[in-house]
Length: 500
Image (cartoon, rainbow, N blue to C red; front, top):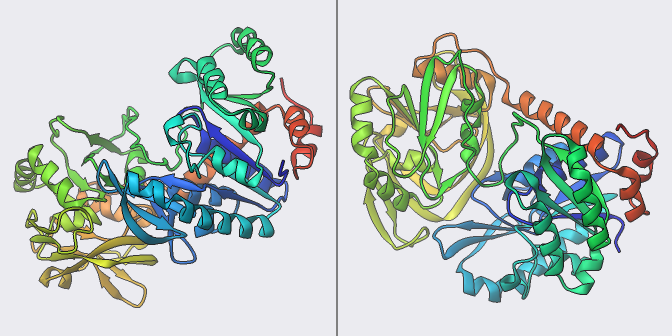
C-alpha cells in the first residue's frame, strides 16, 4: 500500500474524521513533515475561499491551517453544495461545474474522479504525506458503485485506511464490526486498524471490549481518543447547537437555522464571546426577545425566505425592530433584507422573483458567475475597525442602499448596505465577526458597549494545539508505525515514551 498516505474513514457521519485528520496534520507538521490534507468528495454548505480563487469545504481549510498551509482547491477537488433535497451544485477543483440531481451525479462521477486523481497526483508529488478524509461511511452499499469518496478512492490509489467510530453515540463495537463486515475482502485488508473517538470515563472498563474487538476482527485498536469539552473548531456542516452558561452575558443574539443555512461558522465568534448569549432558533421554535438578530447565509435564498415567513419570522422581526432591536444579514441573509430577489436562470431552484423583507434599499439578481474572493478592509462604522473575510455568492445587489456601505474594502471599495435608520446592516462578507476589533465594534453597534476583545483565530489555534496534544497522547504510535512502516514521521513518534 501507498505509505505516503493514510485515509481516515468513519463508521458514521460525524464520527470524528475531520478532527482526527486535523490533529494528525498538526502532529506531523510539528515534526517537520511536509503534510497536506485531502478530501476527494465533500458534501457541505460550509465552504472557504482558497488562495487559487476557488472554494473547498470548511473542514479542509481547517486541516490546511493545522498543516501550516493556505487553503487550496486540490485539498477538496469535488464539493457538493445541496440546493434541494435532490439536487446539488457540483464544484470541481474550486469552480462550479454543474447543477445535478442525485441520479445524474452518479453518471457524472467518472468525470469527477478524473479531477480527484488529478489533484491527488499533484499533492503526492509536492508533499511527503497526504492525510485523506472519507465522507459519511464506506458501508453505504447503495452508493458503492462508482464510489469516489471512500473505498473506491482508497482502492484506486492503494491507500491504507483507519476506521474511526464515535463511542459517545453508543453501539461503537457494532459500528466497527458491521462496517468491516460490509466491505469487500480487498477493502477489509486495506483497513490497518480502528480508532475509537469521544470516550469519557474509566478506560479500564473498556479493555475487555477492545480485546474482543481485536480478536473478532484481527485488526488493532490504534487509539481511544478522549472527549474534549469546549473544543472550538470549524464544523464540517452540522450547525453547532451546544450552548454554554454565560454568567457574564450582556447581549442576547439569535439566528434562524433555516433549511439551507450556509457558512454557519460565520456566527461562531458570537457563540464564543463570553458576554454574548447566542442561540440558534430551529423550526417550530418561537424566537425569544433579543438585542440582535443575525440572518446567516443560505444556499437557497428564496426558499429559505419562504421558510422564514412560514415560521413567523417576518412578524417577529417587525416587532423586534419597532422596539429598538438590530439586524445583520450575511450574504443570503443580506439578500433577504432587500426589496426583491430575482433568480431568472433558476440557479437556486425554479426561475422567478420573491419579495424581500424590505428593510434595505437594494434588489438582488442571481447571476451565473459566482463571486469568489478573499477580502480585507475596515468597517464603515465609528472607529473604522479592521476586518478580514471572504465572499462566495451568485447574487449581485443594486440600489440606493449601497450608498450607505457596511464595509470599505481594500482601495476604499464600498460593500454592503445599511438602512436609513441605521438599525439594519447587510454584507456579502463572510467572516465579518472574525477579527477581534470588528467583532467588538459590531457588538458595540448592537448595544454591548465596551465589549471584551475576543481573538477567534487565536482560540482556534489554541484548540488545534490542544486537539493535537490529546491525539498524540492517545494514539498507539508503535502499532501505527508497524501498520505503516514506510510512512514519514510515524517511526520517530513510535520511539518516544508513551504515556499510560
